[in-house]
Structures are given as structure tokens and as C-alpha cells.
Image (cartoon, rainbow, N blue to C red; front, side, top):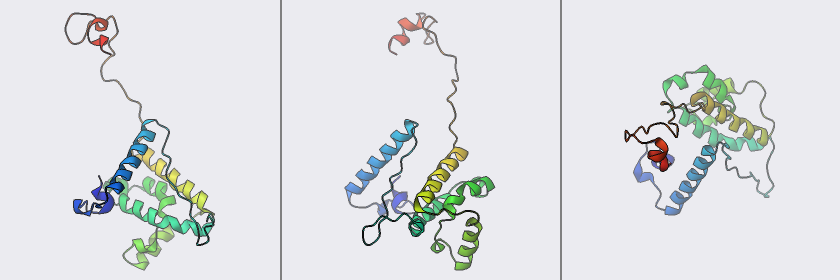
Length: 181
């Protein structure tokens, strides 16, 4: 998992020497796994954006700070299966993310302008808080489209306590394998 964080090619040599970085990544990974397993959603770590005077930036100029994250997400989307890359629904749901792309994310300024103009239509967020809300909502909407939460369905019928044990011992389930449960 880690090589892709430090190298787009997944080069294991790109791993940092500092074990503390990997330890912190493990801690964050486990926090995310626990939050998702508890179905409580994901609480992203978002640090306040401050200017040179340590004043918190919440207005429109703070939105520019989202460009690196949006670019990283965009490059991740390029690794998605072709069916998602070509999907108009995915494109619509990803609009709040893609409209924050940096022009540096593209090969030429013309391509950048054409792409970004296509996504910067409609109402834009007025402040950093609204922009962050839009980003997080877009990620959850994309997740629901691509990998929706589905109830677990049982393949085999449930064994009752007084039914014969499925292991074939001839005993009741509660006196055999059900005793361990």
C-alpha cells in the first residue's frame, strides 16, 4: 500500500527511511478503517488554513489551498476503470472536486483552461468551509455510486438451536457446534 503514497509507480524504493512516518500512516489507516466499520462515516483530518500572521483563512482565497488535494484526487481517478472515467454520472458527481484543479495538472495551458472552464460553471462556493463541504460530499456520493452499501444476505438458511448440527454428528446444534458460539 505505501509505495503508491510515495511514488506513482508503486516503487518500493520510494519508501521513506523514517519509520515514524509509516507508523503515523498505520495509525491513520486504522482510524479510517474503524470509522468506516462503525458506519459512522469518515471524519477527515482538516487543519485550519492560516496566513502569515497566523490568522485563520476561511474566505475565497483559502479555496486555492484545495488545488493540490483536488489534483491528487484527479490523478487517482485516472487509475479508475475506464467505465467510470467515461461515465457522465461520475463526472457530474466529481464536479465539486474537479473545479478546484490547478492549471498545473495539465500538459498545456489550453487543455487546463478548457477542462477547468467546463467544471467551473454554475454556483461556486463562496468560502473555504462551503468548498470543503462540497468536496467531502462529492467523495461520499462517488463512493455510494461506485461501491454502494448493500445489506449482507445470507447464502444458506440459519441453523436453529434445536435443528440437527450441520457437521453431521447427529447431535442438536446447541449441543454440538452451537455450544462454541
